[in-house]
Length: 83
Image (cartoon, rainbow, N blue to C red; front, side, top):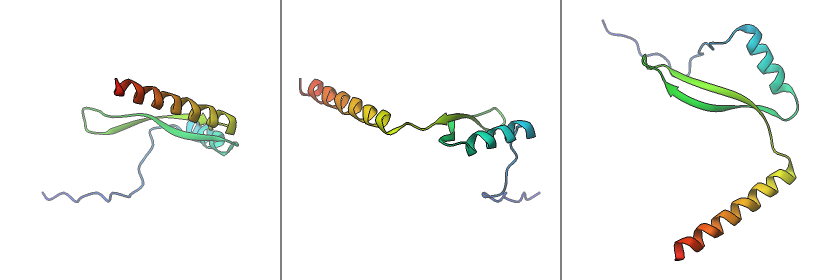
């Protein structure tokens, strides 16, 4: 038997119940919430499993703090490499 190669962009089923999907859609439509992949792995059958989470985006002042902290960490790493 020659198997057909499945279309790579075909619709795929979610292993969620309708109630769970509606809940996720409702949360995503709220202001500032988004779905993010938390982890991905392949099971023994070769199926990709994706754990998703609902997260709220950072506010401007939070972003500035994170960027400032990253800059400080980079500078520390540079100084440590010089030694």
